[in-house]
Length: 320
Image (cartoon, rainbow, N blue to C red; front, side, top):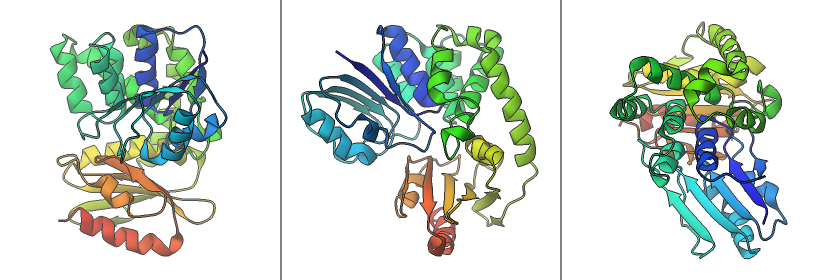
């Protein structure tokens, strides 16, 4: 039987898959992944039959037609995710663990599934998904000290940083290759101290964030801030971690980070207020190509004629 692992190319997707493969190794699996916003990954499995497919950290709702086709083609699927799913197909060939709660992520769902076999990697994934408080609390419960938690936070942040871009050409390393770099390490602290790849990501992060920190808000209200980044490779890489950073700077406000696409549409990352992690997905799903989860969502390609409407709705949505 062919094994296929389909996963979001960010920290949560990588750390979720790493936990599963540490617990249940397979001799060889085909890796299907891409940039963080490339979530229609099941489209790449057209014609696959009789395979064992694991799907991690991508919306079932956005992959529904392809999922139904795969189920009809005698494939067995395990689907673990924390995004909005809509109705879940009823099939004995589909095992589903989906929880869209704002205080969890796919890595933490896998950790629960595995009974805590590789919790430290789950915590790195949670840190990468901006769940710092949840990750730190769980880490302290298993006896980690502040230095160890900081190492896990940096791992999650850097893995997540590498997942953002308009295409894989924007990234410092392809997510499939980054997963292979992670694979030999059962302990993420060994990865932190020994990996040259992580050191390379740290250098890139420092350079990119140095430019992003010079930005000021494009618009600001009592309850929200909007920043615009230039359409450059460095800003396309840093948009996610920059969104998390500014959200933590002012936790009572919602934040949007905007990049103008080549066709003059907007790519937007939205963060709900940190003190009330709700509503980001509801807002973004009102617009074409929008989606995500309650705390963090986005729009891939907002038409130019809808920009002012989005700005108004963004401000109104989080001022209620």
